[in-house]
Amino acid sequence: MTECNDTRCPVHGNIKIRGNVFDGKVVSAKPDKTVTVQRKLVRYLPKFERYKKIRSKIYAHNPECINAKEDDMVRVGETRKLSKTKSFVVMEILTKEEKK
Image 1 (cartoon, rainbow, N blue to C red):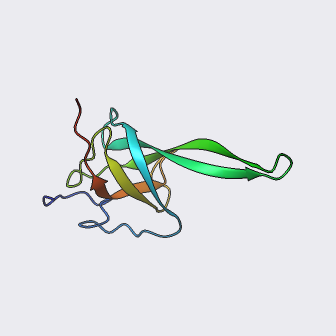
Image 2 (image 1 turned 90 degrees about the horizontal axis):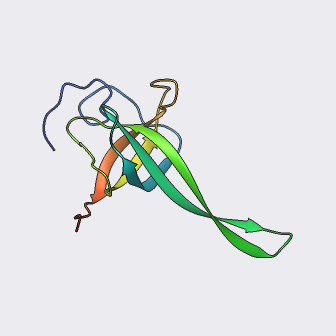
């Protein structure tokens, strides 16, 4: 990690993490300072007595010092509303995946 001047950084800034914390995979890092994180869940269906796999996408702020790329496994935490669609921030990179 490097030093950053981002006020929305959970390490160097003054943003507070509260609420939910999720792990997921970055599927897109195209917008500036934003990543799309996909998390996979398993939901129980009582009618069929089976489990179903579902996916959920979360838009999260990507600080300069963390700089998560596509295919990285990251941990995101809930914070106050940062924009119309963003209310999460990337806290750390768990693993880096190398592209083949």
